[in-house]
Image (cartoon, rainbow, N blue to C red; front, side):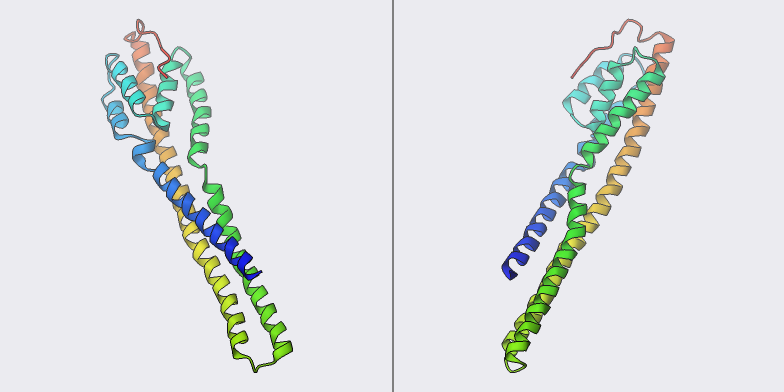
Length: 209
């Protein structure tokens, strides 16, 4: 039983570490909001800049790039319809960014409980041995206490980094979402301003996926 409890705790630790590393790599700003795409947005002022922006978005696949390409594809829609559609698709992109965070949340909740199970089991075994051997066998006494404390320690060591990572990544996703919303709003404003002035009248919207 001791081996099973420790093995489950170690497995939870490995799973937590795996998702901490994977989400850390996936949520880097350069992966979600590439500097090249952000720079192209800042220089997007005329209809001549739109093809360059499309190419840069295609060259740097990311959540922001997909949102911008979708907005460009649907620019023949009204601004309200395009904005609503973009918000719906943005929620899907945010959901992708949050993928794996639920696993960290589960590890945070389960690991201390597993450690507690190990602690309780260790104490039960300790008192069971005391009933048969009394206090004469110090080794059995030490083993029971050590297992109980080790199980608690492993559970906490697993849960604490996962909790820190989960909190940090949640804030990071929220920060990315706010920034993407701001950039997409600015893009839509400029896009429909060019439509209203007629600069994009002869430039058909294309699906550049």
